[in-house]
Length: 326
Ligand SMILES: O=C[C@H](O)[C@H](O)[C@H](O)COP(=O)(O)O
Image 1 (cartoon, rainbow, N blue to C red):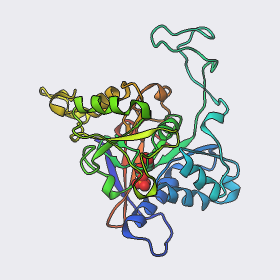
Image 2 (cartoon, rainbow, N blue to C red):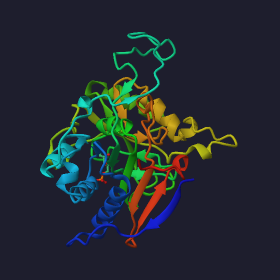
Image 3 (cartoon, helix red, strand yellow):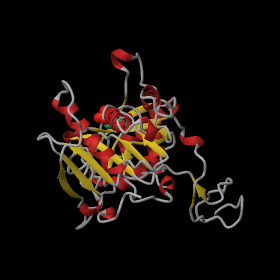
Image 4 (cartoon, rainbow, N blue to C red):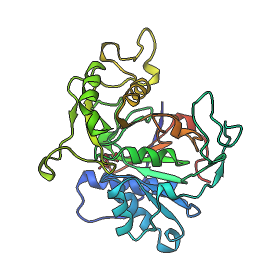
């Protein structure tokens, strides 16, 4: 179980926001207060409507602080957000290697027999963001997340898995005991050519009616992601967490009942799936090999703006008591 506590409102007063928007903003300011350090160099900025307030809170720290940093976007929306806020823009594929990590590769260019991966010259160094802030569509009590409601998920997972600390910010509607309680579908970013095959496979896995997301009045035809892909929204029954796996409950899809990790891994194996909008992997203060796991990493902490004006902070049980600031 994640722990929780209420925090005081860290955000300065703001004009005319709806209660939901005001709750997102309070959570964003509190998350930035707790997890943005002036010594940081690389900051990941996620996508969606909540992250707008994260950027606002960061800008409020002042140009003398932010001008020495680089802000790494998770897609076109967050790129625009960073530029319009006057923050220095970085790119996830242009970070200098900064940190030594243990490598399994014995020799340069060696093929690792166990993983089948080849050392492409990183030589044990890893690019690393100090922190990444992002929103979420739903977060369960283990801090597993559904993301991709705004059609950003591949780049979000890439940025999250490159961060020492991944922090989620949301309003109270996103806090649920299990994923797919209130939010109805898992967004999956797919290659358009594979759409019919993927849809058939999803149905066999227990998703009754997966649909290609349409642009609606904003765009005729499917939504095209920042990576030129489509989004398949797949409904499933509410997802079990690890603690539910006992007494004959396997969560392996039998009867359409899935546990988060098992479903995430199964979906990622489908040819044509670029990324799955389930963030479930391990979490912690730097997950050295987070990118090697399909689930990426779940947040070390999630901040929820509550209806009563407070901010509820849920901390991953794996990092409870661990000092999360440098
Ligand atoms: O694709 C979008 C992202 O995963 C968003 O972070 C997520 O949908 C939450 O967005 P919002 O903050 O607008 O609820």
